Length: 111
Picture 1 (tube, rainbow, N blue to C red):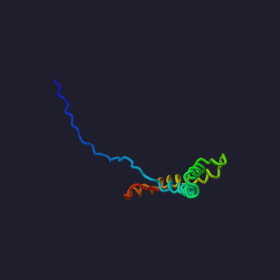
Picture 2: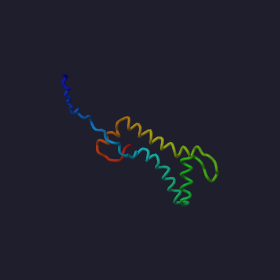
Picture 3: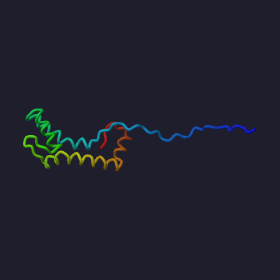
Picture 4: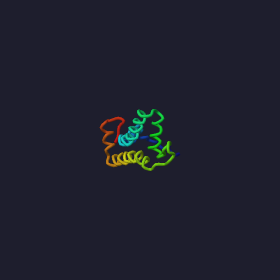
């Protein structure tokens, strides 16, 4: 008659726990949006809420509503700073700057 095998369960050593990523704000990308926001704010002072929409669409879509023409220069004024901010953020990630900021305990902000 065969005996039953006795199974021993051992607690394996736990690896470092993985934490869910929390929301962060990239300061570089927000700084890239600053020129468009400032331009829109000037429009609010000059012509009201309608001018704000006109200026934001002009900067982010490159389309001038009043003239009904596409302007590559306005599109560049809106998107080049944003793209520069994204590149700076990616560079900060690769250099480990954002990781150092997170380890320092600064909660939401990253470069």
